[in-house]
Length: 375
Image (cartoon, rainbow, N blue to C red):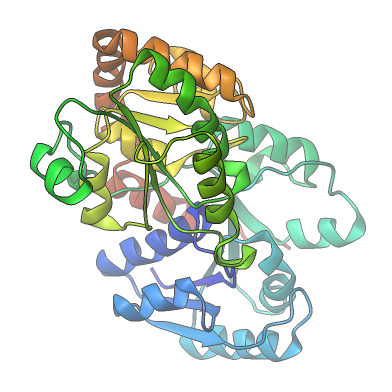
């Protein structure tokens, strides 16, 4: 199967990583792919570092860049691509006018962001009527898409993200915890894996720590990730560091940068509890990884997180944007780690099946082949 993958995002968060991972998994499975991206940003750097076929454009104008449209038209025609995969909805404005003019080319959208309100005007009706299939990562996302987009139920399918499940294993890496991260065997490491951004809830986690430490002085907070690229370097990290100083948490909170692949799995193996205090997630990739490591999870009662945690069966739910609720949830879990670990272990077999990249790639290829062309 030949597919062109388009993502002109400047950032490097879950949306971008999942777009990149899909293309890489298809490429490594022997399928011909080409990735089109924006020059000078993280996606291009990852593609170059891993030898993935790609073309990078400079100075892209969102929605209406005729130069990019002409180039996409030429690429699709010359390479005879029949599938164009889009992940960033903003890019549809550049892709749909091109694929509409090309016979037998199907456009697919992997929808990863919540559609917050109705988008059923003439412009969006034009865009979405030419999408062969929309992949939604969670039932919540599918429901809001059907409600707010001009699409029909046959246009949307729920597809989980595919991960290399062999990278993730239950069990703590005590040597790495001590020698590389500086945590003792007695520490209870509360970890957040995600870009540093107000919406991801790191600030709520920092503000929860005084109450947690009053009951569990052995607790430590580990923040894994870089800042959102377009937010400017230093902004959110500086705010978090100022709050850590204000609350007297020096030595209790540690930062490390973004991790990928085996390095990411190794850092996860140092967590005692995985925190997802995000204000809203449709389907958290980092939480999926924690599920595969059978780490107790605390997530917010918002978006797709409750369904992902079986509405509390597989983890602990707290209120979003509320550091007091988060602190209470952390204390409950640390008070009874046996129950928390049992919930995580019960979830593991299902997570291994849901998130296997082999299972997901097979489903995606089937949808590529079977989805009807749009008018």
